[in-house]
Amino acid sequence: MSRNLSINYIELPANDFDKVKQFFASTFGWTFQDYGQDYCAFNDGGFDGGFYRSEKVASTETGSALIVFYADNLEEILETIKHNGGRIVKTIFSFPGGRRFHFLDPHGNEYAVWSE
Image (cartoon, rainbow, N blue to C red; front, side, top):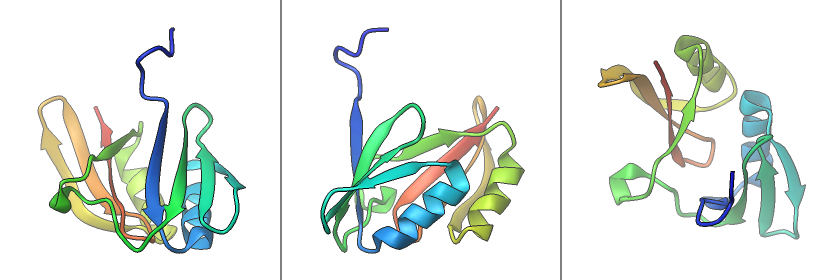
């Protein structure tokens, strides 16, 4: 598959890198590389991105794009997210093609997880 014209990297705000790194490492198995005090890169095993230091949050309420994860077991990942410090903001609901829920990471960025 060609990388030409594909999404290659994503950057998100965070103000406490230790908290978001712990959350994503424990919940999704991400690895991290720090680049100074204001930037931290991540890899999820197939996708790269980073967190930049900011007090702002990514939220659909403010018009931000929504990053959506896929999980084979929706209920299991929901409990893992809660256990690791995430906050559920929309409980599991059905939509055409599957089910999903929305959560906030420890910084307050919004994400969703869906399953068939």
